[in-house]
Amino acid sequence: MVKVAVLGAAGGIGQPLSLLVKSNPLVTELALYDIVNTPGVAADLSHISTPAKVTGYKGDTELAAALAGADIVVIPAGVPRKPGMTRDDLFKINAGIVQTLANSAAKNCPKAFIAVISNPVNSTVPIVAEVFKKHGVFDPKRIFGVTTLDITRANTFVGQLGKGEIKDKSVTVIGGHSGVTIIPILSAEEIDALTHRIQYGGDEVVKAKDGAGSATLSMAYAGAQFVNALLDAVVLKKSGITQCTYVKSDVAAAEGVEYFSTVVELGPEGVAKIHPIPPLNEHEKKLYLAAIPELKANIEKGVAFVTSQS
Ligand code: NAI
Figure (tube, rainbow, N blue to C red):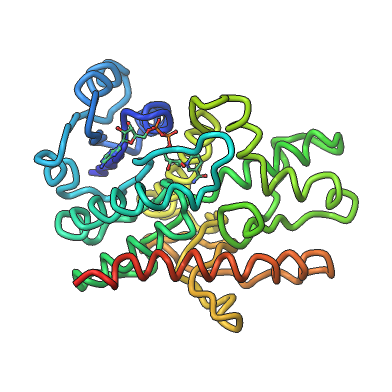
């Protein structure tokens, strides 16, 4: 029995992501939670002929039931960016939303794997971790920031340069999930053309949507890839499943950074092995050093948000 709960399931990401999770036959129950519209989304998805039983939960009073017994909790709840906004500008609203959802998850499914999509990911992952610490149920192997879209974009852009097929690309992207904290590991000829585009690919979508939000469909695709990888590792116990993901990690401890994305091997308990930062060339070393101050500030902001409350 595998229960996946999607929090923010009626949103731009939540709906297509729930559709893709419903398509995975390993899932036996799909619980959709939002503050609006979940009965309709649940009714719609429930007609799809895959095994998962779909249930809808709406509003605070139904959050506990949505989470009870969940094995995987995916969180795309919160506001997206509008043109001119950074991900950090979303902190004011999304920090509180993520904290509330994490509180309930810590109570109702403390052993679940938590995949955080809500931005700013650099800060919302530490928020979830601090909430779980407060409840005495923190396990760093089970809390993930979903940075998969950065890899999806990198693979697409590198593929479009014309050497080889997009489907065969697997670019490593390390660091965090915003602007300069996104560090793509590219070949020499790809660096100039693509570093900036991968770091700021999200802005292309925000600009094109012109006030109507940020990436939703490509994020849903990327989010489902991450959930499917987790299901393969946890349910099927497949070995060698890896994802770049933002987790509590010692790889950048020398710089005083507690959370960092590198290639992570997934296993039945979540994080099985965190790969080190790969050897960096001069260009990547500069990107790494440029990422550190912002990443540190984002993490401290998330931690302080929870720890400063009694
Ligand atoms: P959206 O506004 O379309 O959907 C958000 C949903 O969250 C709405 O249905 C809303 O009702 C719901 N919501 C609001 N407060 C809630 C609460 N307290 N509990 C449960 N649900 C609540 O936004 P969209 O486009 O789906 O984006 C969601 C988040 O994902 C944003 O923070 C966005 O920045 C982030 N994002 C992350 C990416 C990543 O790579 N990790 C990529 C793209 C977006």
